[in-house]
Length: 434
Picture 1 (cartoon, rainbow, N blue to C red):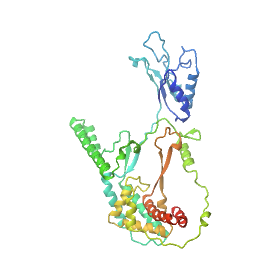
Picture 2 (cartoon, helix red, strand yellow):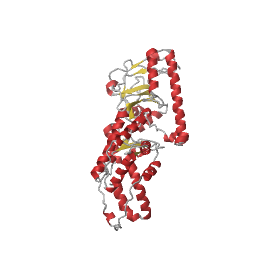
Picture 3 (cartoon, rainbow, N blue to C red):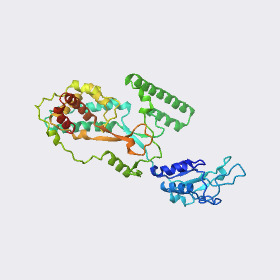
């Protein structure tokens, strides 16, 4: 962390106030504008501001670095002002006493501050962020591969919960196998660009091998063409296809969180994966294991059993038409757009989905494959601080096929509940907790 504190010690006071919410650091340095006999032998006092600064550094796991060629760090151009030490560096305790910090007066040039060269340890292993996804050029082959596998399945009536479970698991395995075969791992860096293609990477490798101006011009020309094509397709997609111009606004884009603000839970900062997990589990899963009483539902008088109308192809397309193709997929990596493509294409996918949905309702069985989900914690917009978990909210990414069946079933039940609320209360409760 780089620090500049004015004559009123604003930064030092702010650091002392926020010390408990900051994560551990490996370096803190800058112009602190603070005099003390602890680091300046020509100073005869050690005031409360200097004491506060040292306490803050200790809270962050740092100590004042001792320079092997100690001397003044501020040499004013005004000859009437004496040289002093106001530029400080704080490093981990092991480096603070190892005399690996030194002043670099030869690099001062026209400045009135002497540069300080500290030794800061960093983690040796490189942590690469990446994600697996199916490239756009392979999407058609990816979907056709799923259709071909579904087409080869035997057509059987799902007359028992075991057959419903087996059919749902088979579909889940087909989805997982296709994603494993066609997906590729992409490394995410600060320079990653959404328009970058394999052709750009090949052209760049050619230039690096030859270092010729011709290959450089070819690479630049290719990048311009690819970039233009990408953004033209993006404009058409936003303006005409999905008609979502608000996708260009800041409030729907990725939010950048403060770099030096750790989450705090029960008064302690979450500085490790274990502490972060305990905080998330204790906040968002606090109701896990609690008992519940369904006996009040038994007081509702029983009514004549009503026949359930089986799901139809019309209801399938109607439910899918209301689903956004931009919704994030769940653990099956299947989006609403993929399901719409399966239903429109020939290959028996729609018929299999209908049989699984009707089997779930007929046998009151919810397959285990549909119970897999992903929990994602996202920040709430417009919060002044993101140091507490109240500034975040969890969302659940469900199995997409299971979510489609829930959409099918919940619609008729809720419409029936509007007509006969007391009659449908128990069946709705049982449906959602099947």
